[in-house]
Each structure stands twice: as C-alpha cells, then as structure tokens.
Image (cartoon, rainbow, N blue to C red; front, side):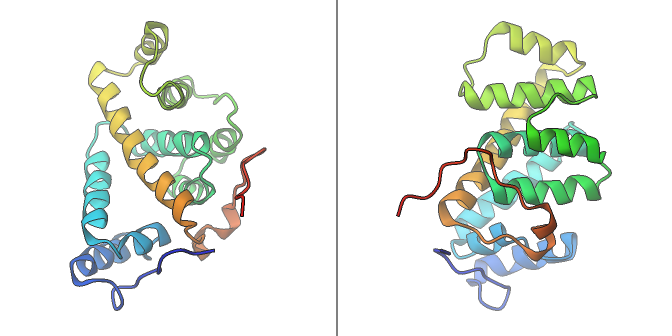
Length: 190
C-alpha cells in the first residue's frame, strides 16, 4: 500500500520542482524514491545534497555502487537493491559482481569485496567495528579518509532504504527486471 504521493514536476510542491527536473535530465527519469520524497521539500533537498556530496567522494563510481548495493541488501531494501542493480549494470559493473552483491557472496575483486564487507560490518555493528575490520579495509588499498566517505555512503543509502521500506515506495518500471526480495524477509504485519 502506497502511503504517499508519487510526485511529478507538475504535482510537487514548488521547492521540489527544480530538483525533480534536474534528476529527470541527469538520469532520464525521476526514480520513485525521489518522487515520493518530493512531497516534503526540505527532505528532498537534504537527500539530493547528500547524494551529490557522495558522488563527489574519491570512491570510484563502481565502488559507490558496490557500497550502495551492499548496504541496501543489509537493510533488506528491495527497492534500492533493484534500483542499484540497474544503475550498477548501466555503469559497467560486471554482472557477476552485481549477482554476488545481491546474494551477499564473496566478490572476486578483492578490493570491491573488502569495501562490501566493510560497509556491511559498519551497518551491522552501527559503527562499532573492531580494528581487524578497519585494517582489512585499509589493506585492500583504501585510505583512512575513505572510511568517512564510506560512512557518508551508508548514510545516503540508509536514508533511502528507510524511506523506501517505511513508505512502501513502488518499484519503477525501469527497475522491474531487477526486482529483489530478501530471503527470509520480514513480512508486513497487518
């Protein structure tokens, strides 16, 4: 059951219109998570800014997609896993890597695997990871500054995971072929 309107630039409150139009121009469509958030302009502005800042991070586009998929799987967000499957494949992330992320399997690329494992560990431990996890991440070639970039990515993705799960954001047509359901996921109790 959808709990909020899925806005367009024609139906959104005025402060949200420019952001929606910019998304449509950049991505080619307005993902429903943004369209739903558009009903609360201050939230849309914050979410858009977080996304922009994360895209400015030193992590590569592939690394950002790996992080966002790992976090979305950990947070059981079918909407975001489907969306980032589409985005990752469109940005050239190997299909084998995407499949492994969706199943929480080990990635064949050691650096990307270290990133996915680290991001999931930070989410699960709520940031209270041990030195061993941090050292494994750094040993894979990441820099200490990128630890904070990972946290920014986790914040961005957890934001949309929570919104998508809480508000039951409908899956976009562009993501339908990448639908994902977590195994053993909790069902809504109604």
